[in-house]
Amino acid sequence: MNDRALKVLEQYEMEILGTRRGRGSYIFETPEGLRILCDYQGTEKKAGFQNLVMEKIRDGGYERVDIILPNKEGNLVSKDWEENSYVVKEWYPGRECDTSSETEILAAVGNLARLHRLMTLAGEEELEQSFAAPDMEEKMRAQNAELKKIETFIRKKNNKSDFERELLNSFPLYIQQAREAEESLRGLWESRRAKKSGALFHGAYDYHHILMSGYEIATTNFESCRYGEQITDLYRFMRKILEKHDWNPRLGIRMLDHYGAIRPLSGEERRLLRILMQYPEKFRKLANRYYGSSKAWVSKRFTDKLEMIRRQQKQREAFLKKL
Image 1 (tube, rainbow, N blue to C red):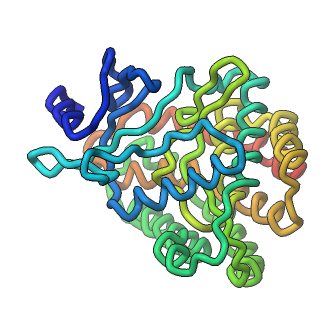
Image 2 (cartoon, rainbow, N blue to C red; image 1 turned 180 degrees about the vertical axis):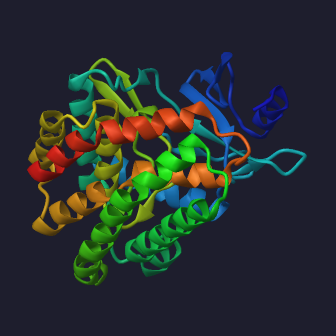
């Protein structure tokens, strides 16, 4: 975000006491507290939906969410002269969750469980149709077809690099895991798809969007919020943390127990979590990035990531057995 974006602030009624750069944003002080100016990829309707969700959370007593503020004309989304979209949101002091601290990891998991207990909007048929998550079974089927396509592409190459040979040798194991996950999901998804609970999930719950300040936690960036399976938030957060901790089974079970103590999981939700954890997401992402990159030169980072995925495989299997 460049300095010209600050011109957007002229569209708001607020007194600015100081400004500093954030990650792809500007954070500024006002007499009412911190505010943040950032790019926005959604529509006015999507911004309104985000605020509706966050207002529901606040009604439940959870105050620290980054609600979007209206400009002078009452719009939540503001445009600059080039038609770029921005929003101004309430903001909070604090730092990102420390992923090396088990105490902060468990605090973030508990925070997610409390959020999920408040994140429901039942009886909103139009909103459910507009902001429903993609069908999970269809998404996994498409991802598996893409994996097979990439494997076929590499197999047919005449001159393979060392990385391509190693990647190709890894495909049988991870395609098997992907197919097993798809098959397991198919049996579960029919019953889950029929349930209309009004539940919402955050969609991007990770350490970047959790601000720690003493005993207080703020949760930010609800732009990916949708109707759907709340367990996908827990899966996303746990997977990213476990990848950083070599799939430590003890930590994984502690995270799961900590969440369940605040928001108990049904048997179906636990099965769904295991299916998602079984899916080789890290390998799929690596294969996809390779396929979308320049094949003439393969970055060493690709090789390092493949080695890490292989190294963590036994620990990942150990955690899945405990699940």
